[in-house]
Length: 156
Length: 372
Image 1 (cartoon, chains in turn green, cyan):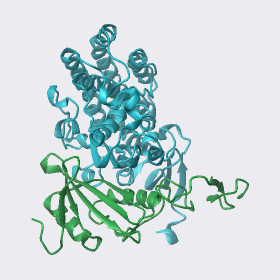
Image 2 (tube, helix red, strand yellow):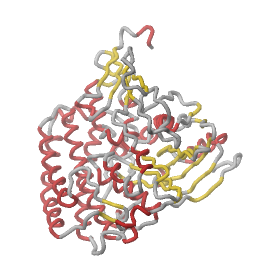
Image 3 (cartoon, rainbow over the protein chains, first blue to last red):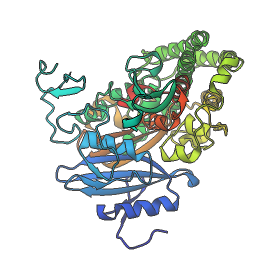
Image 4 (cartoon, rainbow over the protein chains, first blue to last red):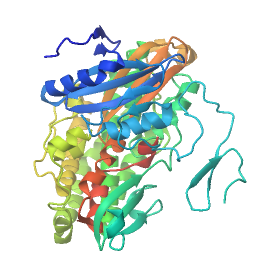
């Protein structure tokens, strides 16, 4: 059972799924308890940019109970969220993707690098304030690594 | 590891342009002779950020970007997006549409698994089955051309309906295909499993324990080959999958061969599902009048919805957040191939390069979906 040392707000989502809202200080404790309860499959980590805050959404599945889903939501105003890679291996690539696209920094992640975009990309594309009018070009620097700049002629 | 052993290990790049990486996967290998010590997949070469593009368009327009994610299983992508979008927009498709979608999704599953089998054979050096599977796949794609006018990126479904209704001729053609397909499928199956080289290249290679698979988020035929009977069609039925009779094939052997056998058994089950669906196909409208063409761009949705479906690769999830306007506020896609690929470094420790190719082939990678 979930211990009550922290406060969770329970609600029902539009699709009828159970949603737990938790502040990020207690996120790891709640996730650890859910894992012990049998939620052994982290389906996905997604995030939504509400301009003043970023909401991080976890969908967990319980393999012993027909993979029923529980949703955990937390929010951050300074883009820092604790990492859950110690609990589920799949969080590794998921968190890298969210870092890449939304710029969320997962504290405690072993290898937080961009995964889909080249290293050195300027800005986080899924943020609402991302400037899509500026084109970025991926070139090569002298050592053969990806080099990103706004100037198509820049680079090796 | 680097300091005293650098003379021993060789670093090698495999891909992005390599025949056995199924598109544009780059693998950074650390080799000891011919044994793989470490592998690091580098992805993103086909990245288009479909999630951002979806935010710029109306709900109905986002569909075509889903076609282009898993381009060999486009029907399943459309079903996945529409499951989420219709829940968010409160639009219920008519009964006939649900059955039509099941038929199309299952025919597409057959086509996708056939392509996988052909490409997997090529990875292992078997050229002959490739021609056999593409002949059969072409028949499915010809059916698609007749029904919706295009082969792969069909854009057949729309919110609350489908683009065109089935007529008697189509139903006759599908039945004709289903009658002769099982025989051909056995022929293709035997081409693989009666080949000793194929068996020795796949048996006991790439053993994936169920606990590890769950922890890495692996789903689909890969997870079922590890002995976990997880299929969204059974565990959380969508469309009308609770009204058709089929079994979820699993295997307890956990290796590459098990994944092959599970996929072939799934094709046999798909034939069974389509046959039942054709029998039960009810009459009625083929679109919901609330989402007819003139109203489609005025649909508004609020709240957040997560819908999961069983695509050809595994659990395909779509998370949509609406803010009450005519465009989605945020779309996030759970791509099964992306998660399945993340287990490759775990599976390819201390295996030969040739075995690693067999393992990466057994994942069923489509890079439109991994990179999105």
